[in-house]
Image (cartoon, rainbow, N blue to C red; front, side, top):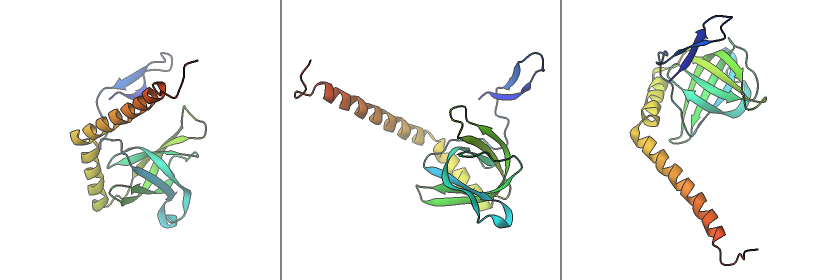
Length: 169
């Protein structure tokens, strides 16, 4: 994985890229989970973004979430990760480390949040999620699902083209 570390100088316009993971906790993509963000600390029950947001990636150290409004760095937040299968929840206090606007949409922002008080049970849940979502078994299942989806969409178009009730012009 290449990662931008820092510019090599103001005049050069070049960047230095790292070729190895520099994080203490490796990130992974997760399917079937969303994140709800709320105000941190004693106001954690007050959600400032009550909708379920897409999770870009997750690690034992933090999370990247796609949200509908800018969140200032150093904002304390409460993160609630809702997992659909198996139905479970991971909650933690966190600190927004960065926020950047999506290149695809002015209405979306990527927010990087560092977990601050992730309890041992939540750490274990995230470790198990990482184990599953990075496993060969999971990748094989995704590959099969994608092939079946692609085949079914191809088969449907083939059936329409070869439908005896449709006459050529």
